[in-house]
Amino acid sequence: MAEQYVKDVCKRLPKLELHAHLNGSISSSTMRKLVERYRQTLKQSSSDFSVTHGWTTTIHKGNKRTLKECFAMFKIIHTVVCDEEAVTMVARDVVCDFAADGIIYLELRSTPRCNPSTGMTKISYIEAVWKGVEQAVAESNFSIDVRLLLSIDRSRGAADALDTVELAKEYRKSSPTNVVGIDFSGNPEVGNVRELLPALKYAKESGLKVSIHLAEVPDVNNETSLLLSLPPDRIGHGTFLLPSNGGTIENMELVTNYKIPIELCLTSNVKCHTVPSYDQHQFGFWINRAHPIVICTDDKGIFSTTLSEEYQVTAQTFGLSISDIRELSKQAVDYVFDEDLKTKLREKLESDGIKSRPH
Ligand code: 6MZ
Image (cartoon, rainbow, N blue to C red; front, side, top):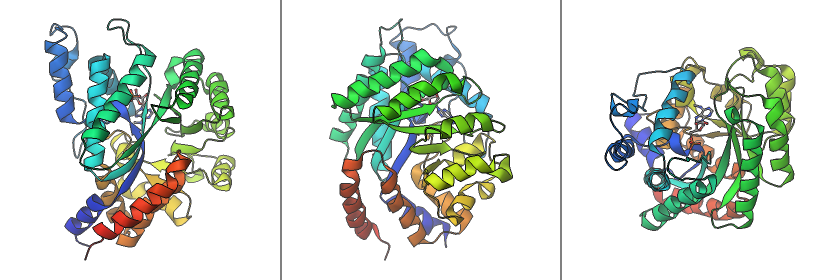
């Protein structure tokens, strides 16, 4: 199929994004606004931080970075997203970007963060995120439903993890922020999963949905078994789960027997060197097994991608037909964490699908 044709179909296709980290999804134009604001409004001197000198938080086309370098980028981003105003601007812009790319349902995940120097607290952070979401939904010409996952950063220890779960419980109850679950993420080379597991169990017992980054790096089979014991409602990446890639048969069987949906982020994995090339991505394995999978962006700002582009590169690499692409976006509805929205989303996909169907 011609590249331009597939590109157009993927762009017009109504899509669901289930794995997007807020601060990794910032476009370069929003990033420029943030850096300028950090310099001017907050009057930081240029020697304060490298954000004022040759900063870069995007891995452009054709370039790659290690996971370690990616995590260094988050430090830069978090420095400029330092108060509620910046958080709201980021959430608003990111939701508008996704809506313009044809996303009809977005599960946005973010780590509640406090900053004593600006007075931002975890609570004011969450509320600032939701304020930005509401602004985007009100302003956007497109119709998009947004739900939040609060992220546990595995590098921050057990007390912080428990605190995040408590916040998620509170916000789910008092609902205006539409928190539906917990994400477990952060630098996979840092943190002790055994210590963090009780917080994740507590989240599950509390009825929160839980998506877990696991096997994102090699040689973590014991940690992966612990995390699979929950079991998670969805898995992020799972790159090194397969026995052919250093995983264990037991872990792989748990994932397949429980049919745990896997959030696959092709460009992220290729750009971070955890997968050598698109054609060697584990997407090929799971699709052949008819295992539940969903295509996602991970950090569209850092990896300079869009969900449309992720669908396009997946289709072209693995020879998917237009109906395969449609089926992938349709199946994603089965895996969303807000059960109450599933019927509405199916109807929307059906009617939008008819409108956007190529002649
Ligand atoms: C693991 C990741 C990640 O929470 O400040 N994050 N964790 N693996 C990845 N693969 C590349 N990409 C992003 O967004 C940024 C945070 O999301 C997590 C990291 O904890 C990062 O600091 P928020 O909105």
